[in-house]
Structure formats: structure tokens, C-alpha cells
Length: 271
Length: 292
Image (cartoon, rainbow over all chains, first blue to last red; front, side):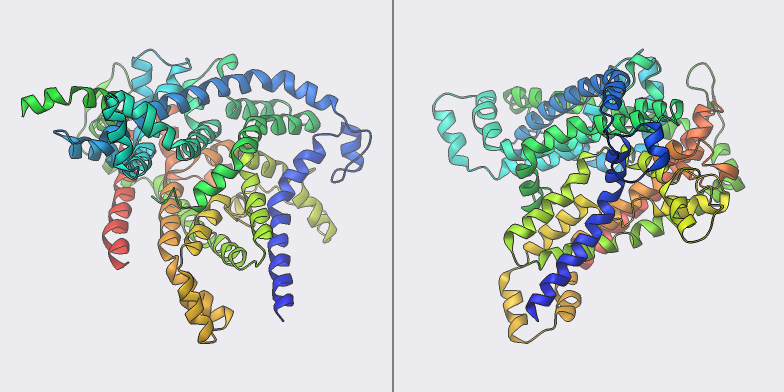
């Protein structure tokens, strides 16, 4: 009886897995086909595998990937630096206006992106940032603050006070406590937030679409949409390009899968 | 007071970057959006106050209401589509072997490494009328003509709703699973002593105890869907496809801003969506959270 129930559960989960992965299977299989192979046998592997598709795709998507890497890295680093510093001050000190300033930042979660889109576009164009990376980077950093500060403040508050007292006796100031105690104690949560911010930027579509015009400045999302329109019959290289666009995320997850799953599992991101 | 502020000067320095970013790139645009919703505005030289005219025009525009009806369909679907994630989390929670459970968790995270836009573009390929899987399946079932999924107005919304089948959101599953794992062991022991069946356990114990996570997922999903339009723009066009078949308010706003250059009118659409979303957020905090 128990055995049967277990098998039933696995069957159900594997059934779901099949559908979750079917699209990615199609992407991988088609990415290694020539036009003729695709016409004859579209949905299963055909030999020889056309690895050349990847070389062709790399040629067209690598500049977009580079742009996205730069933008997403700067947003992640800048966003986490500002957020952790502010969260640290909010968590460990009292000063006039603390509640109000914290509320001002957190209340942002109530303002939907749809209200900001158009005026933010006008703002970056008045700042003469349109069609530069800064047009995506600066609003990206701003957009990451509310959630990151909220989560980090909760985490910093939970660090034992003794550790900070010990650092203070050793002569550490605000910066010393931040750098030598708060940040090292919070690496897992900072790592999880870094992934969330980076992935968010990697997936960002609308904002780069309206702020970046030159083809050589476009990010990977805009690049893929553009290439899909241009080469809509060259399926092999196009799918290879889709795979390549996922590479940076694959690398990040390979290195941080455990932290991330644990971070989610322990409810670090409860909100 | 002033002495305390001076004493805390380094703390203000810590907060300054975050506050400066937020003020300039979030609050200034939000204020500008509210302000300019009362203006005829093109973003540069034209800025004429028109009072409530933008709002009056929007609420009598049948195009806006059509878009609103469509988004209501998507919102309702976003709630229904949460069910598979809940079921998967429940089943996953009861997988006995720790290693197997961990393996499934890893497997469910893998789709996250595929950028969302790639997922959508693959579905576009699946829907391709000549070479897509969907029409290949139809041909197998004896329907040789096939369907132009993303071109035929009557099929556009169903096709978009079907994207991502079976709608198991990976992060959603993990958050729900975390909620289940936080249920104290004693609850299950007591249930086992009473001889509760698995179904009763799911409906009487587990679901009620993870309601908080489920509600959070619903609220976030509804808010995201109400203002979302990026993937419709990507899959179809700025009209939401042939005959505005999948036009939504966000897209309506986008069109008025970036095609017609009516930035004030578009800001007013943004304000309407903001008010609806704010209402939902407050409803969530006051009514749903209070019920916990």
C-alpha cells in the first residue's frame, strides 16, 4: 500500500517534469539541426550534430550577452552595496528619522512599475542618459532597493549583539562593524539576493527596449527578440542562440544552487 | 536634537546612496506621473493642464474597456494556474526519501536558468503554424489544416493562457514547500494518531496552514498580471495581436505613450492602474492579513 502510494507520487512528479522540460528539450534538439535535418526529423536528435550552429549563434548573440553581463553585474553590485549599507544602519542603530526614512524606502513596494514607466523614461531622457547603459543601470539599482533593504534589515537585526560589541572594543566604527561583522555574517542571504537581482536584470525586457536604440548597445532580451524577427527560418542557429543566452544563468546556478535552494527553503525570502 | 543628528552623521551617510537612488528614480517619476496625468504632455515642450479630461476620455474609450476585460481574464487565469504549483508542493512534501526530494527540488529550479524571454520565444516556436509542435499534434489527430495560434483572433487569448503548461512555477513551489516544512511535526503526529486519511490531511491541515504563502502568491500574481504586457508585446505586437485580440491596459498605455506621443493620457492610464493595484494591496493588508 505504502509502496504503491510512493510510486504514484513519483509518477505524478515525473509527469509534471516531462511537460516542464519539453520546451527546453525542443530548444536543445533543434539547436543542433541543419535545415534539411529539421525538415525531415524535427523532434528527435539527428546526426551529425550541427555544432557549427553554436559558432554561428555566438557570433550574433555574444555582443548582446556582453552588454547584459555588464549591466546586470553593475546593478547587482551597486544595488547590494547601497542596500546593505542602508539596511545595516536601519538594523543596528537608532537616529532621528530612522522610522520615516525606512518607511519611505519600503513604501516603494506599493508603487507599481506601470505608474513609473513613462515619467521615468522622460526623466532619463532629460538627464541625457537615453541610449546609454546608465539608462538601465541607475533605475535598476533604484528598483532593487526596497526588497533588498527589507530582507537585509531583518537579517542584520538577527545577528548577535556581542559580535558588534567585540568589534567596537577593538576600535571598529560604523564602517568597521559593517565590513567586518555584518557583511561576512550574511554571505548566504547576500548571495541569494545577488542571484535574484542578477536574474531580474537578465530577464529585463521592456525598459531596455524603450531606452536603448543602437543595436550594439542592446541587451540579450532585446537582441533575441530582434534576431527572432530577422532569422525566423534559420531555426538551428536561432535555438543555439537561445541556449547561449541562458549560459550565464546556468553558470551562476551551478555555483550557487545549494545556497539558493537552502535560502528559499529556510524561508529567508518570506516577505 | 541637532546634536543627535550630527552624532549620527555617518549613519546618514550610509543611508544616503539608497535614499538618493530611490528618490530620484522612483519617487520623482511617480510624482511626475501623478502630476502629468492632468496634463496634455509630450515629454518636452508641450505641457498644458487639462484637469480631469484624460481620465474622462479613458473611461469612455471602448478600447480601454476591451483591454480591461482581457486583463481580467488573465488575472482570473493567474489564480487558477496556481493550483498545479500547490499540488506539486503537496506531493513533493510527502515524498519519503530525502535524497529523492532534494533531487526534485533541484530539477524544479533548473527552468529558472532559462531566461523567461527564451521560454516565451520557444512557445512562439511551438505555436508556429507551419512547423510548430501544436499543429503537428493537430495533424496527428486528423486536423490537417492547423490553426494560426497567434494570428487568429479567436485563438490568441487561449494560446497565451496555455503558455507555460502545466504552470508549475518553480520558485512558487519552493516557497510553498518551505511553508509546509515549517508546520510543526507534532501536528502530523496528532493527525496520524487520529487516523486521518491523506486527503483529509491535505485539505484540513496542510492547505489551511500554508494559506499565507498561497495568498501571497495570489496577490503577487494578480498585481503582476494587472500591469504586465511585456510578453504580449513580444509575442504579438503593440496592438495585442490581430484585431486587438489580446490588448491589455498596460499595452494600451504603452501605445498611447510611445506611438501616439500622448504621454499625459498614458500617465493617466498608469494612475488608474496604480489606484486599482493600491486598492488590492490595501485590501490584502487589511482584510486578508487580518483574517490570519
